[in-house]
Length: 316
Image 1 (cartoon, rainbow, N blue to C red):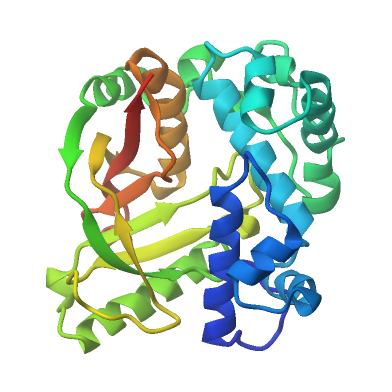
Image 2 (image 1 turned 180 degrees about the vertical axis):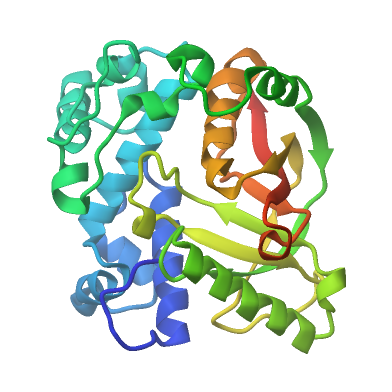
């Protein structure tokens, strides 16, 4: 999470604000009131807004609207069988007109323009650019097979997508630590160093650790520093975990499992290929859980990423 503070954040404050952020994300289609979020984070409603803004770097309302818009993009692209009106209704907007207005104010293009990549151009007129400094290019959200942009070798990419497996995965208990500056690499590597050392301190040697990353945001849509990246290792189900570490369970269920080995800076593009080229023809849609990267190597030692990307699924 991005912080507006120059001094280290108290671990309990960070834990409570992460709890508040997750509560908001879990209720985007029926946005909670400020008081509801404050109570869930155990902060006084009177002080909560200032604390959230100081730690996260954006107001509660800005955070909530940004997440609602990002979710809308995901739905517009991955659920193309749904009309724009249906997407608006699912997202809790009072009408498709209000949804389209909010969408254009934020991204600088309309929902229908997003669904027409050949006619969409990069936008610097929405709130995403004016507030966060990020230009929005809809073509980044589409497969290279659609945009004719050569990012991966076409034959290799086609083979990777053909080899996506659908597997029933068991639940996993994990301990996680959130990177301080989103997907910024220095912060991610520092977070992994702390987590790996902590794992060793509780008796899990580095060679025995299973490494996962929970990637909550799409950097094609979300400013890098506002993205949320959780580094995680598997732990015993009965283990108690203290702040700043958090214990969670990766839920059991059906997952798409896609193998990737290559440049680290192309991982986001591989995510988008799965969502835009594989998922719409799979007979599934993504469930309400962020994608999980299961790392199979150490990128700093090997110079490349080797991983399995797991996307939780539900039937259409």
